[in-house]
Amino acid sequence: MKITNWRVIAFFSAYLLLGLAIYKDYGISFDEPINRANGIVSIQYVGETLGLLAPSTDIPKLHDYYDKDYGVVFDVPLVIGEKALGYNSDDKSQQLYHYRHLMTFLVFFLSTLFFYATAASVFTNKWLPWLGTLFLIASPRIFAESFYNSKDIICLSAFIISTYFLLQFLKTYAWRPLLLFSICSAIAINIRLTGVIIPALALGWGAIDLFRLRKQTTPIALKLGAYAVLTAMFTVVFWPYLWKAPLANFQFAFANMSKFRANMDVLFFGDRIPAMELPWYYIIGYVIITTPLLYVVLWVLGIVNVLKDSVRHFSAFWENFEPWRTQLTFFVISTAPFALVILLKSTLYDGWRQLYFTYGAFLMIALYGLDWVFEYAKKYPLALKTAQAVVLAQLIVMGVWMGLNHPFQQTYFNTLTPTPVAKNFEIDYWGLSYKQGLEWIVQHDKRPHIKVVANLTPGVYNRMLLDKSERARVECTYLKPSVRDTLKREALECDYFITEFRYRPDASPYTKELYSIKVDGNTILAVYDGHQLVR
Image (cartoon, rainbow, N blue to C red; front, side):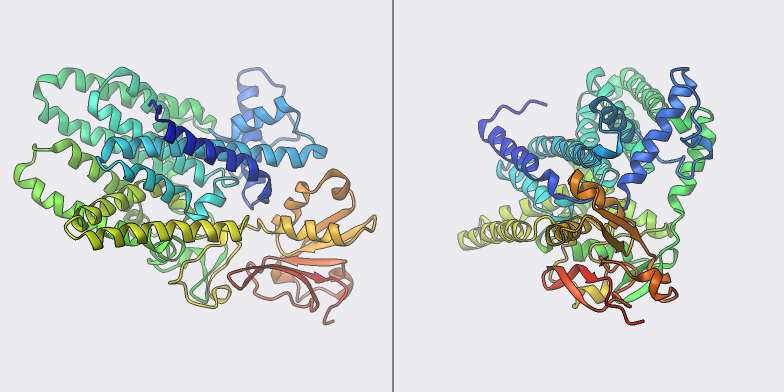
């Protein structure tokens, strides 16, 4: 992939500079300390297995560890990097998580380059790669999570990059894209097992090419075999949990993925529902209300056009096969996972982040829809200008909204969402806004010791982002929402209670609000006087 156009270089340089300017603004989410711990446990296992590290009594054994089946292809390098930089100590916690956020952003930034390159190789309209990349960046939730979601955003990035190499491999069946494609496929599988979609597509299309390109049957078969072997090999190498028993442990991880161990309630359209009992339309509903509306409409138009093209294509199957194959590849990636989680009744929670990996293909299908709109509107000059104005307006609105609500873009809901949003859905379920709440406390209270009680663990985690001197003044613990009504006043009393309202929409028994953060009129976090209680 070569990008030499100065406009493209200037655009991506500006985006990179924006990321470098704001990556320290985001808080610590629920999952980040867990992902880091997964990396530490796996590094210890690798070190002991290879005879590089002595056994440790402080670090759990990998095969006894609760999250042993999590892929760690991103977490292990991050932990190695933090040790090399000297960030693996308590007094460096702020630098540690800033570093993790920067690395997460840089991986996503890299994927936007590949997204642009993929779109440029697919569409003849020179504006579509630009617009598609802007759609990707100007997706509020994706934008925010590209700094801290080191699982789902990294998986999305791996899918975008893997899809680029998939298309290159299918065009040429050359060794260089084959090797890179194998590595990227293994990385995608490691991050989330849904990555198996990538090799399934490669081998499926390859099997068709064995019939389509009969004069090249032997080299194609050789390359497909090499790809399958290399992908399997890299998957095992990148995933220490598989070393001991590759097939058995892979099957165990796959079973856990489809029925994830999530014992929690989810607020969905005003009802609190156990995660394992959510209705089938949960995932589709969340996509519709948390994605900018124009992107959803264009995706629907794109799907319609892909299906129409497919019906026409079957009358002359081998004509224009490669463009149709590309269309269908994006169609499968953006639709099949949704069908599978619905059919398998997979456990879902926290919106649709477990399927973020489909979003690159989703936007590619949306670009097919936009391409059709532009081509159709060319017949009517006013219609073309109107379509262009609508797209521009959507991007401007998203950009302004994201700027005004920085750094809380992860709380975005579009205009289809029932109001009040806070009564229907969890808003800041990641707990990122605890960072700003704790910063407000230390700015307004200069006492040498401040006792803070948080609603959930991200309140404790975000203390690590305070400056070292401020961190020393703050004692932060958390009380599960379910136990607040059962404790006596002495156990509840503190200087400040801070909550993002997850699992409980009120701050009871705390009554005096001192500070709050609002997005679109919805309170996403509030700080209360810890001495003012109804007890």
